[in-house]
Structure formats: C-alpha cells, structure tokens
Image (cartoon, rainbow, N blue to C red; front, side):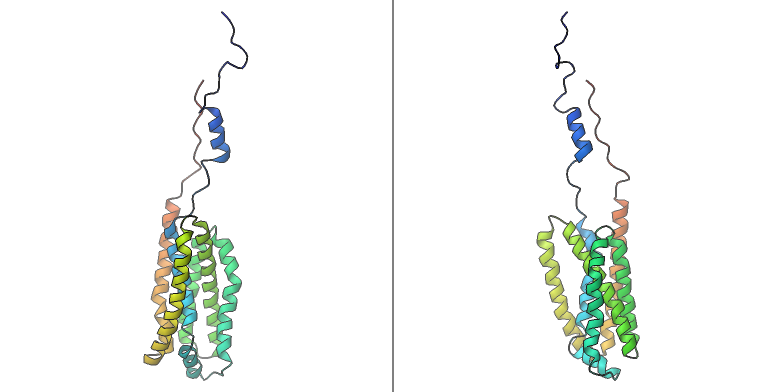
Length: 230
C-alpha cells in the first residue's frame, strides 16, 4: 500500500471551506437598502413643510400682517424665522435620519402640528415668530431625513429624486394659491388649520412604517453554512 503523496490528502472541494470563509468575511454581498415604503411618512412630512412655507407667500403674508396690525418689516422676518432654522437642522436630519429615520421623523411631524396650531392662535409678532421657528425646525428635520432615505434607496433613486422634487415644486405652487384663496374666502389662519389633519396622517404613516420595519428586522445575524465534512 502506497502512502498518498503530499498535497493530495483531504483535497479541498471547490465549494468547501474556502467558499464558507468568503461568506464569513464578506457576507453575501452588500446589505440591501431600506424599503421604499419607509419613505412615505418622511416625504409627506417634508412636503407639508414646503406647504407651510408657501402659504405665507403673497396675500397670505399680507393678511397675517394686517390682521395683527404688524409693521411691514415682519414679513421678511416671517420667512427668516422659518427658513433659517430649517436649513440649519437639515444636516442633523440627514445624519441621524440615515440610521433612525422614524425616530427623527416623528418629532419633526409633531413640531409641524404644534407650529401650525400655534400659528392659528398667535396674537402678535413675537408668538408668530416663535411658531414659525418651531415649524421650520420640523420641516428641516423632515427634509434631511427624506434626503437620507432617498440616498439609501439605491435603485429607486432614479425615479424618486425627480418624483419628490416635482411634488415639492407642485406643493409650493398649490400652497401659495390655496393660501391666497383661503385668505380671501375665510381667513389666513384656516390655511394652517387645514394642514393639521395631513400632519396627523404623516405621524401615523411614520409610526406604522417604523413598527413594520422593526418587526421585519431579522432577530440576529445569519449563520454561514457549515463546511462539508471531508
């Protein structure tokens, strides 16, 4: 009986331990992106933020100033109090929203609700600017989270970017038009009141999507297949 020549005993099968080692080190490829439906709540909240900015354009802003007998200088400060906090917190929403989109979108939507309700009750310029700051912070967080989720949706970015961008432009125009119409027919405050039900829907959509995403998360890391016995 002859001994096996060196290097021929227990040969490694083509799909044996080497392939298992690849699975252990590199996994089964890049991790999948987030589901597209997780974007519903943040995108709705972000679009409502655009709407709440647009309804103060033109007659809406003028009616606010005349109703509370405010100086004309309040109108530009109305935009600054909204846009400046919004732009400052967009990076916060983007960075934190990449990992915790639901946890960042829920307070953003709640801030929109609080800001909208406070705006309908404001008696003067100080409370008006405070309400606009709250609303701007909520809008900026939602804008950042939406951008983070779109960046994580790899294949869907091709159509999500123009879709959300087009909807933002549409909401900007419709918000200005509806704000002017409601100001003439009812009151400028009704423009903010009508936004509240949609903001509640955004909260519910975000919460439901977050719960579904949490329940669908795997309980632990997948175990690599065992190497075949040789």
